[in-house]
Image (cartoon, rainbow, N blue to C red):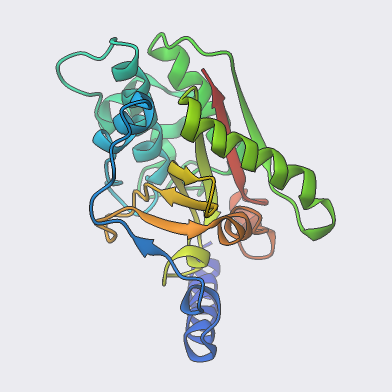
Length: 250
């Protein structure tokens, strides 16, 4: 397994430098735009709470923990159920033991697997909501698809992004190829959506990567490209398939 990791790292580094040299991918024209100071929207308390509870992951594989705790704290604040101190990443790992979440965050992972594939992320999200007594209508994970099958999925996602922005009664956690959005390796990553502009169709990501001090915006096309990445050819041994998102209807 260690040899495989070195091979993967070499492949990902070569891919990164290829994009850098050819000015493609995140080095191309459609690049992420950082947001220096998020604009508060009085009519969307849930969105504002997400920004307040946005935290950074505590190590390279814990993006799921930072993302889920951000969402849980935001919902609890909106429903006036949050205690004086927000839930921490360590606290949620101790409370929610689904899918060996805590073990997957360890140095050796769970049976050699670190991080959470999309399906496992969905399980963890649902159990986290249950663990903290949060009322919700439904949770769903959606695996994004390639060009031939993408149209209905794209249209539904656009509708849900607008619903989040204008109604504040749902949440979206993205599972995406980070190298599609920022100048980094093309690895699976998880972060909550923090906003959507229906006019420009730009998506705001509350990226939990500690190397990124500020949230950023990307076009919807880039966003969909990132979540529709098929990880199989590189990350299949670690349980990863295609990206997508987890949708929470409150």
